[in-house]
Image (cartoon, rainbow, N blue to C red; front, side, top):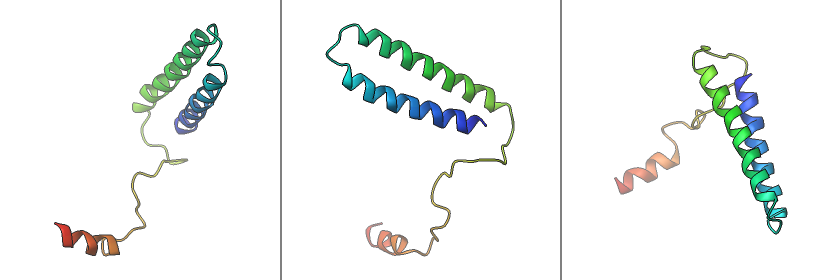
Length: 83
């Protein structure tokens, strides 16, 4: 569940970036954008710190790296030429 909340926070930050570009000419919009991004960031940080002690989540995980790429791939053979 924490990953879902964090992904929604990332989506909210990206949406706020688009909104900030649209309202760049208005001087009153700048503090509102900063407050909104601060709120989203606090929610993301709180979720991350709470999930540190929650243990493993078997429901949804973000992949880190490319596990389906075998170490005998073409990249490994190419890398041997340079190292």
